[in-house]
Image 1 (cartoon, one colour):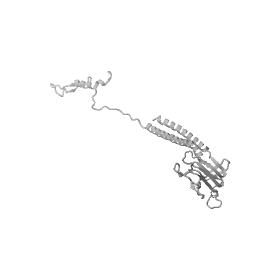
Image 2 (cartoon, one colour):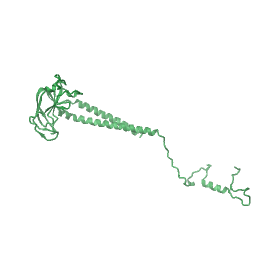
Image 3 (cartoon, helix red, strand yellow):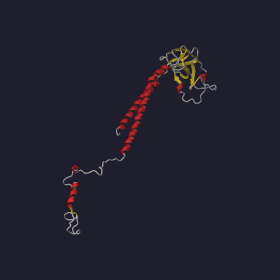
Image 4 (tube, one colour):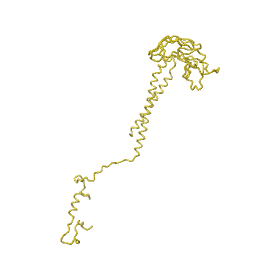
Length: 280
């Protein structure tokens, strides 16, 4: 365990660095993808829907010159209520991606899209970050998003007309270009999460290791049962040692024992162990 936390800690740091590198690189690639402009400063245009997978395309995003202002104080944004856009398509349109499609006929496929609302020009009090609505066109014009056209249209030609100059972006090429960096961004995030997990496990192992290090060491000793006989052949006793074989000690005590003399008084010659020579 002493080395395990070090290995996990180093591995976690390396994985986090690798994941962060992948994430940053992917974000830079996503940020570098430019909108695919197909119409600039025009009031009319015929635009082609390719629909490479046959499931329908996301279609077009429509921009105009303007800002979020309401000069006449009628509760509607000026750029929105003053612009009229019509979009028709020669091919079929599906209700959902990959589902059955039908011909739209002369139906207007344009819709206003502001603050997650469709066909609504109403002023919103708390608008939040508005930068996502603005783009810089190739000719240098700052334009604002008005809405979208031909959502889930299949292969065909889209005819867009407007009473104001419009700038149009074909969304699908940009989305296709973002697939690779988007996948790598996902890989980078997952890698970072794995690295953090390694790091957390390493910290836990380090804490456990330090806790066990401060605890006293317990020594276990096997003790022979009290009724186990002593085998003198297994006892290694030095010749000069003061200890003797327990069996020999018992025999010596037996030899030193003095039987009482029946011909003398018991008080004068008692029986028992012979005292050592020289007295006690």
